Image (tube, rainbow, N blue to C red; front, side, top):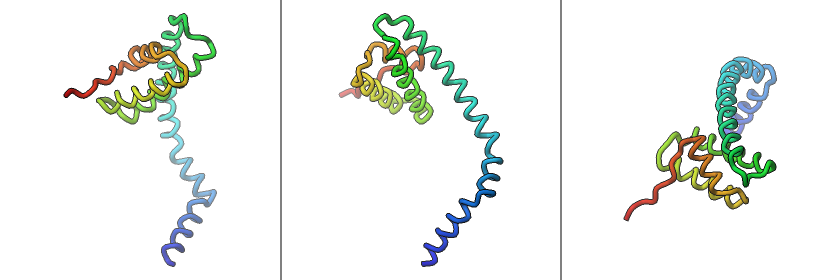
Length: 126
């Protein structure tokens, strides 16, 4: 029962408003710096995606948001998997996912190639 009592004590300590405020106050500068860098990166990617979409005649205005969402998902995967076959496989899954949702595969591949420079996955040899 002491284990349960210790958990209750830890939980109670963790929700004291003054302690939570101190933690956030201490972490705030690093949190703001981190998200500021990410916002700058995402803005650049959004501009690249807009350039790709502007040159595509078949892309409607309403679908632009979906292509941007696809790019944001690639950005997130790229931060988790910096490179290699695993990244290529994850991005291939995203292409298939968004193609299944009705987006044009050729445009998705252009975004992958031109905005992120991620090559197409290579099938394993025999």
